[in-house]
Image 1 (cartoon, helix red, strand yellow):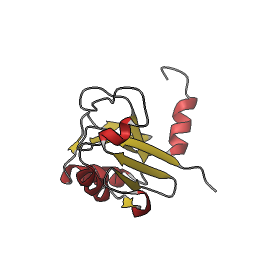
Image 2 (cartoon, helix red, strand yellow; image 1 turned 90 degrees about the vertical axis):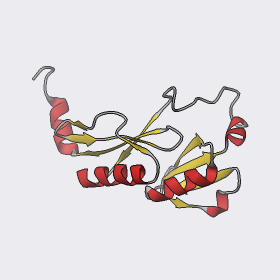
Image 3 (cartoon, one colour; image 1 turned 135 degrees about the horizontal axis):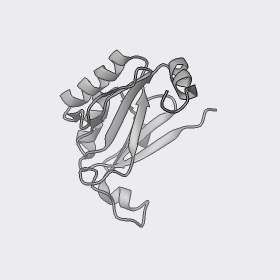
Image 4 (cartoon, one colour; image 1 turned 30 degrees about the horizontal axis):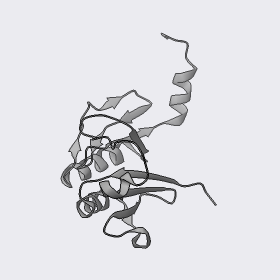
Length: 143
């Protein structure tokens, strides 16, 4: 069985967040969803758990970060093409997120953009040509 990743995110409005994540390609797993949580599956191995702040607080003794004020994590999502990177950013913006909180990056072997969800969590979809990336990394510094 493949190892899965569950990314727990505090969200101000579980229903609104659920609609946003559906718009960027996630499907809701109603078995693990309710009024205080929504389980949103991006792939066979990646699940976003959207949690109301009070519910989220039950899992940590620390203060919950306001993602609009500080960055705790950047969630990088590989996509199958440059067009797929652009498509998920466009879908995020159309669903109430913010496209490109930083400038798009094109390193030749890797293309990336970013978007924020309605709660300010930052995602960085990217497409990488692995062979070109490996060749670039093998080059001596400065050359």
